Image 1 (cartoon, rainbow, N blue to C red):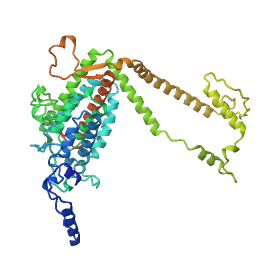
Image 2: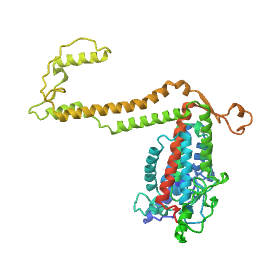
Image 3: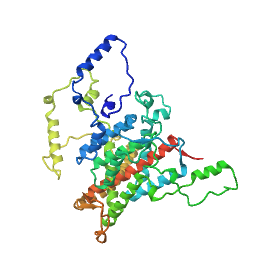
Image 4: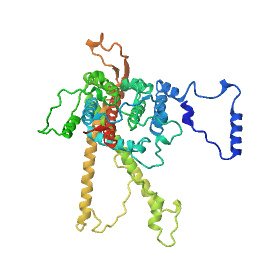
Amino acid sequence: MILQYLLAMPDTAKEITPHSPLSLKRRTSLMLLAQTENEDERLHPSLFSLVDLLFSSVRSKNPQTVVAAYKLITVILSKNHAYAVGTLLQITSPQSKEPPRTHGALNAEIEAYFALAEDIGGDAGVEEAYDTHLKDALKSLETHQCSAQILALNAPMLRPASDLEFSEPPKTHSLRMDDSLFGHVMTMLHTFLTNNVEANLGLTETLVTLASCPRLRLEGWLALEPAYYEFFEAMPDHQFGSTDPVLQALRAARRQPTWSSSHTPQLLRVLETLRNEVGLLRAHVPDFDQLVASRKQAFQVHDQISSALQNRPSPPPASATVQSTAGAEAGWKPQRPAAMPRRVLAETSVNASRGQSPQGGGPTLNPVPVKLSPSQGPTGRNASPTSTSRERSRVHASARETRRTSGILQDVVKEAGDAEGLKRMITIPVRGAEESDNADTGAESREASLSHVLTNVVVLQEFVLEMVAVMQVRASLFGEVTFV
């Protein structure tokens, strides 16, 4: 009801008549009391709805407003996609219900996006990142609201759109090329390299969520329209000496088509423009590829540290440890801190003062001799071989981990040492001396620090890989391409 009101949707809900006449009278009385006498004073979003607010917010100069708008759009698209159809999204019904795309076209599109991602951020770590995005895309598609009916899931939390009270949108629909939301998103995507990083993350999340709806076709904006397939070679009459129509259809579906620049999907066209801007940056910024690789490694180190901190078990409290080890003794009672031996307190204070001294100086203290059994000594003659080998393996493993981490941190430290160079401002689009008079005269110049641009380059590459993962998982999960 809230979404239907805020989005100014037509009130086509079925009128529910209360079973009790008393309830009907009470509801009528409440409606009359809440109704104003003047029609102009009644609250209704017919003039300015939530759609207008979101569209104006994504064009705001305040990054926090843009991020909040994209988060709300993402929630509506993923959790209440049926309400977004006709309000946030302008759709059309497809002419054909059969999957018109071919397996060969899917492979050609994936190769095009993959090549674009490698041109933007290099090929280091692309395969590992893509495997992670494939798992995330599978989870996102399986839990989408519109996937329940397609996958025949009997899950009450994933209600299909047919259970809604208003008119159901088409089961399969296409995005109109003059859609306002998609136009705003493409406009912001053009300035991706200089945008606020948080705003870019919200933008990419919205596009991934839009592509994750199994009822929304990808042709036209993410994938190529099958009517624009172009093949350089004609289909031969025979294949392997056989005229079997099944083999002929299989070979036809596996052919990878090409397409002209005028028929390139809108998203791919904008990404190609960004790829060209990154190419100009690579030509004008020394060691650009190394800086991008160092920024990617810095993110990887951050993710590893965050994962290690999250998976690290928290140590039990000291009081609980003492109680668990000594609580079995009869008549044990916890002692007050004042009852602790003065010698223990003296040792603690001296050791603390020694640890603070860089040379290990400070007051001296005669250590209390501790006798160890031969099996407990680290170098004892009668030490256990198992414990000794285990200790040696642990030391070697720790040394290997230290060398690996230090190798990664060396690049991070090197980048930090060049902090002054990363602060310099970059003007986009980049123009050389020979291009200052007649190149990109219609493009608006934007400025951002080199460090800011490097971060957006890494985010852009991850976004491209994520979109490719969604395309591939959709094709296999929902059978969107033909193989024969």
